[in-house]
Image 1 (tube, one colour):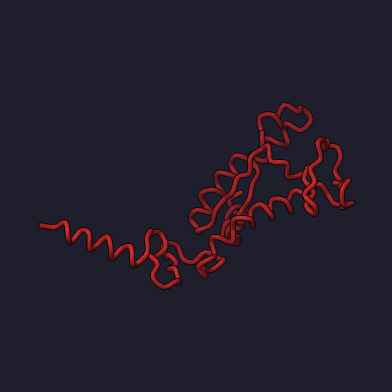
Image 2 (cartoon, one colour; image 1 turned 120 degrees about the horizontal axis):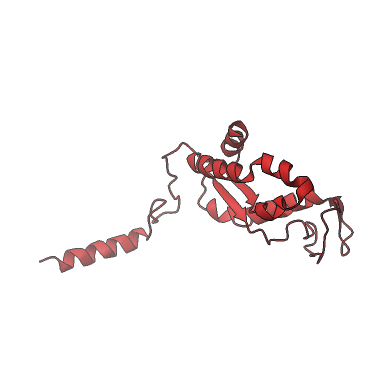
Length: 165
């Protein structure tokens, strides 16, 4: 598990996982042993600290988000989709795809929806060395992690100087 989570965290900047109801899933007696053997909680914990080390982020999607019930092509949401139905068939657009592939596509769209704002200043898509921060490239703006503009900082400095005795 350490090798797998380490490889994922070092290879991808954003990792999306679902916050599953593992306690509810274990109540299914035929699947309980297999579910417990997977160690979902341990894997998420390892991914969380390893993505943080590598400068990435781990997005956890709420367990009630309908990732497998939503059509990845048109966005239509099915009201019911039993676990025994392994192929997703959209009634609106006619898409036929594996249920897990459909859910993965929806999670990809969800993660990409907020990714563009992170790279708006021309920063690298891949995280750099740990401890090295990217600088904003627009003239007159503060470095990453600081707020305000150069003009605002000068005005604040003038105010501090005028208040001095």
